[in-house]
Length: 526
Image 1: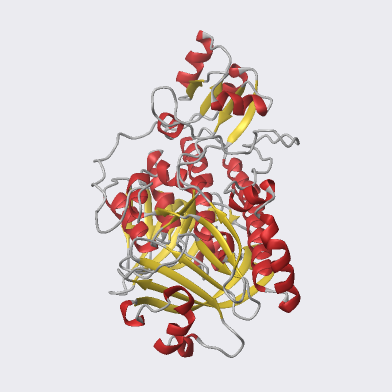
Image 2: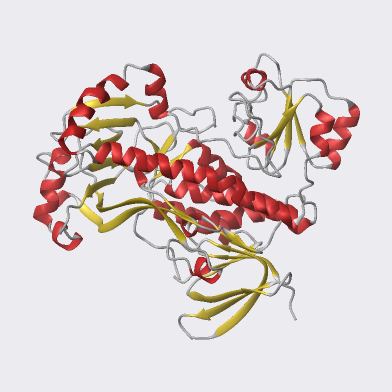
């Protein structure tokens, strides 16, 4: 009998493909299964923040992504009459994490980049056009994944050490492990309209949010030619009726004005129900849920796809260490321990923002007219609206959390430019690292080499040195997902708790140059 595949991934959306690439970075072989023979061609997600861009960097696709994405210029709140209530402008330069804080993109183009990356990776096998019909574990043995070819009807049973369910909101894997979605009390029906045009839409380049209990709406420029509108549907309205050209013309007119509607090519016009849900269990033995299979969030803070990529970034390096025998299998419990509170906090924030912008009737409109203009003039509140920083991770077996507001434990470390001109992420690669402003003894250097930990000496007066000291630390142990595992003053003690990760495989062939089809590199106009 053949040896089991180390990891089978069900679902070849961005979360599944990024998980496959991150596993490959650690030398772990995977098979990705998807029911469709090719990537879904219609746009869905349109935003990723700078924290998530670091995950794409680890997956080796950040340069190609930067070439097809554009930084967003902030947020504009509009009243029902489309008058500006408040404008929160954001710079488009790279921030503390080495990328713009808000990045707009077309999901099919991201998926094309990811598929090219896995196609050239010898450790990833992608099989499309197959249906996963059963997932069953036999005690501590391998998981059996029953697969049916959708074209021929041929059946096959794959054996795997671990299975990752990245198969979306209607997850088969979630159903097979007996997990159910728990509703967090939010559901709204919206019409989503994606447009392609080379005509000039003369509108502010940031995200527009119309705060209107009757017809809330969102507008954003996604790319050089792509634009998106979202309109809340009223009771009794249907996507079929609202997608009539005359109706769409009137809906988008506040932004397009006298531009002939015929110059806008509607790429997609569909109804979506924005939900807030989270699975009651994220894994059963060696089977794990990631992305929309584990959680659904309303889009008001742009964290839907990002949450799934964070799942992949959190779990994959732990799986690599467990498969290598340097972490016990019980360490994988830290995945749900860390990720569930984090994503729940973001879902609740999205629900709160959605309600603040779309509910309250006339009283809500009055309150927004009074409060919103004042937010811009309160520096702390203005910064909070634009800040992409997400909450620190909870304490787990792989994250020591101190209960102080300035603690660095559980937080992402910054990604500054170092003295040699490289960013920190380029130096760290897929390894653990110790950042230290203290002196390094030869014994510590030897131990770091043995454990494959990157040592990064930090100048006390540098930005990274000040970041450490403000957190009351001399040194920090940083995980491959860039989360600070623990801090302290003893480098040797930090090294002793760093799991030994398998060595990274030799690099594959370099990626092709980004395609120049009207996209732009980071920092230039779209």
